[in-house]
Structures are given as structure tokens and as C-alpha cells.
Image 1 (cartoon, helix red, strand yellow):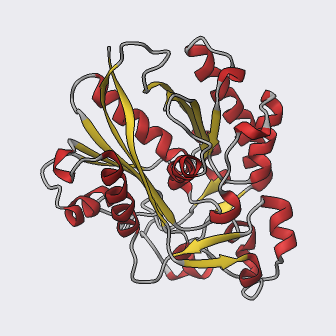
Image 2 (image 1 turned 30 degrees about the vertical axis):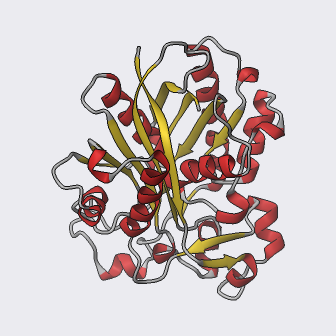
Image 3 (image 1 turned 135 degrees about the vertical axis):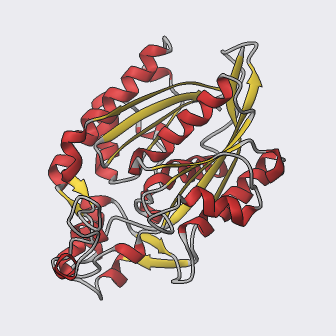
Length: 335
């Protein structure tokens, strides 16, 4: 049975650590306020000379090394990001050029916080149908350059950090699904009626002009979020996706060894775990140290969980995410 498996993981985060106390020098906030509402203590910010694709390249090289393969062994690149280097072309093309991987398909996935789950599902599908044998999946973000780091923007600005994670997804022959590592299935959803509950209003082609001074003066170039609506929907939809993925593979949620949820807000993940009756010891979080790195949170979580001994070969792992769009989904795999 031809399936795909994750054979390598890599991450890269900027050196600069930005604490909650440092944010308090830019805006009216405090360490206590941020921790109570989000669980975040610090995040990483990239230097001005670093692009999103640069973070992605570092994570990708680490993942290839971890898998024991070369860039020339890869058949396809799938790059998930909401913060591309430029409006066009896609960030995958910039990463491809920097890594000397010309000629193979390079795809951008713009599903925001659900980006890595969507990207992983594409890699899995291409491998299953035989159109690729090895796919490089990257999730990378630079939020710091696009945040309103004043009191006006604090509700959003305190949440986000910069970082990248990558996975090598390659073909594998599964003889025994009960023991052999492979991706079981992904379950993807979206509801565009919630698009403006968490979005970046400008720039864009929906306006008479792509970008105007009036838009900049109004702060439309900064992300906007209806926090309460996002919270309620995130808990509901991630819980549904976890149940759906487990049921599709004839297992109980309790049979999952490790849950890696998107890292948007610690309270969201705690609510999902409580709603589903998941023991806290089965949920691995990284938000305390990295904040919300959007498409990078899940691969960073996988890498960190493995390094901490919380993720081991043979484990049944559930990935789940919710984000702007609204988009959400879950992937069940045996690591």
C-alpha cells in the first residue's frame, strides 16, 4: 500500500527574543495581561534584512539533513505562508531559487494558520497518486514587519512571532498500518463567511487602487481580529476536525498518543482538550516561547516535541488547526 510518511523535520527561528515586558515599552500592556489572555511569554522577531523565504530555507535545509536526503532528491515544494516576500511571485519560487532546486513544481498555500495542514495534505495526495516520491513542505512567517506595535494594535500584535518549520514527506510502502509510519488522512474545511473576522483589509485588488495613502492613514495595512468570534469558532471547529479524523480511521480520540494543535492561544487549546476529554499530558504546546507563527506552528511543534521526547516513532499523532478564512482541518498520522 503506497502511502506517505514524514521522514525529516527542521525548524528555524530568529535569534532575537521579544518578551512581553519589551512589548510593554511600545504599547499599554504587561506581562501579566498577555500571559493571562494568551499564554505567551515571548516570541521571536527577525531582523529587517531577513525575508520569509530565508527562514524557510534554513528550516528546509535542516529537514533535508534530518531525512538524510539532498535538495536534488525532492520532486516538489509546497510552501505555506500568509507573509510572502512579495505580493507575487509566490514565496515557494524564492525559496526554490535560494536552494538551487529549479525545475520542480513550487506551490504556495495561502490558508493562513491552517496552512501547514493544507500543505501536508497536498504533499500526501501527490505522493499517494504517484506524481511525486518526495515533497518538501515548508511553513514560514515573518509577522513582525507587519504588526501595529502600538496600543491601537496590541490585541493582535502581542500574539504573533516569526519562525519557520519544514517537513520532508516521502513515499513509503505500508505493510502493517498498525505499526508502519504513514499519514492516514487529512480533513479540510473552510467557511468564507467568516473571512472578515480575521483578515488584513489592505492592500488588495478589491479596491479602486491597490494601496492608497488614505488606507495607510486608516491603518488598513494591519491585521484585524474579532477575538471572541475567532475563539469560539476555533474551539468548535478544531474539536470537530479531531473527531472527524479519528472516526474516519476507526479509532477513538483517546487512542491518539499526541495532539499538536495550532498555537494561536493557549486558552483555545486548553478548551479543545477539555471539550474532547483529552489529558493535558497528551497536548504539546510551544506558544509560551514562540507565540503564533501561523503556518509554522505545527512543524515547530513536531520538531520541539520530538526533541523533548514527547514525540517518538510509532506514536499516533493528531494535527489540528484553525485560522483566517475561516479555514480549519486535521491530519492523523503514525509517526
